Image (tube, rainbow, N blue to C red; front, side, top):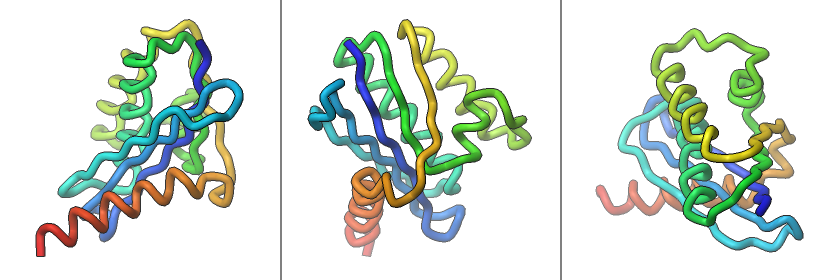
Amino acid sequence: MKLIIYTDGGARGNPGPAGSGAVIYDSQMNVIKECSKFFEKATNNQAEYEALILGLGKAKELKATEIDFYSDSQLIVEQLNQRYKIKNPNLGVLFIKIWNLSQSFKKVNFYHIPREKNKRADKLVNEVINKNINLSR
């Protein structure tokens, strides 16, 4: 089964309160799952990587065999496609986690998309950050 996953991550303060979101579609572009996760303190790039980890975990639970990931983070997509080097050791750890999780699938692709095409995943990120920031006040 092939899944299409749109992911996003963001931080307020960079680093600061952060969130990751993933919208999972079937091959017909029907939403089958939305998920998000809050982080007390992370950078934008860490949150972007964590969104992919979140998506991979859910895809594994859903027994996917192939995944097409779409992200508006050019840096992350290029690093995952091994066209850009990873200079930050924290991102290197997350890259390895994604690489290892990816081995559970027959095929995993990473694509860069414009921000405008990633509004649903972005909305999940903002909702989870807002919810958790409001809880801590």
